Amino acid sequence: MRRDKLVVGNWKMNGIASSNSSLLGGIRDKLGGLDEGKAAVCVPFPYLQQAKEALSGSPISLGAQNVSEQDMGAFTGEVSAKMLADFDVKFCIVGHSERRSLYSESSNVVALKAEMLLKQDITPIICVGETLDERDGGMAFEVVREQLRVVLEKIGPKGVDRSVIAYEPVWAIGTGRVASPEQAQEVHAVLRDLVGSSDKNTASKVRILYGGSVKPENADDLFAMEDIDGGLIGGASLKVEDFAAICAAVV
Ligand code: 13P
Image (cartoon, rainbow, N blue to C red):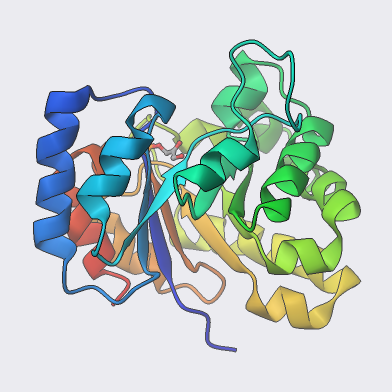
């Protein structure tokens, strides 16, 4: 089945209003001609309104990087899915490896977050990925399968159908070391198979993005692989030229 490719920028904790303004303006100028639904940027919470305004009327969608697993109430510092919906957020990353490792987020919490987003019609981008030790120990498939299994169990194939999955090998994030297209393809196929064990139709439809040192130079080869449906881009999404060039690989 043909799946529309998608490129999502994850700004992480970078940028301030002034630099965002030129980045968003540049992205808008460069990508104004892109088809709707092919590109998104996930910005830090305080800049959702700025990004919403800057991207309004453009084909680039707005995304967030995290969400609370709680609905509302006394959870100081947290941001709910309902709040994100107020900003017309279309995508939200959950389970990024930086949150799993630095903020002890478990797959159970990731599953709850995905569920909250789905209730607001926001597309969760569910991240999975193994560490270098896990890969070297021959555990990569097992680790990502388990991370996704927990979420799949919670939101079911119907929830996965309304989500995007991202494979981000931890050893390739921000390191300049990219998984080869074959290495990434192999894991993407494992993830698609797992979804297929619950629902074949969802498996053929769900988009699985690759993330980890995607650059203009390697995007074409990665995105050409059968089960790689685009990318989740960190560092390169902070540079207009690079992000635009990576997006050009999906048209
Ligand atoms: P880099 O593209 O900087 O390696 O980051 C990948 C990532 O973590 C995207 O979520």
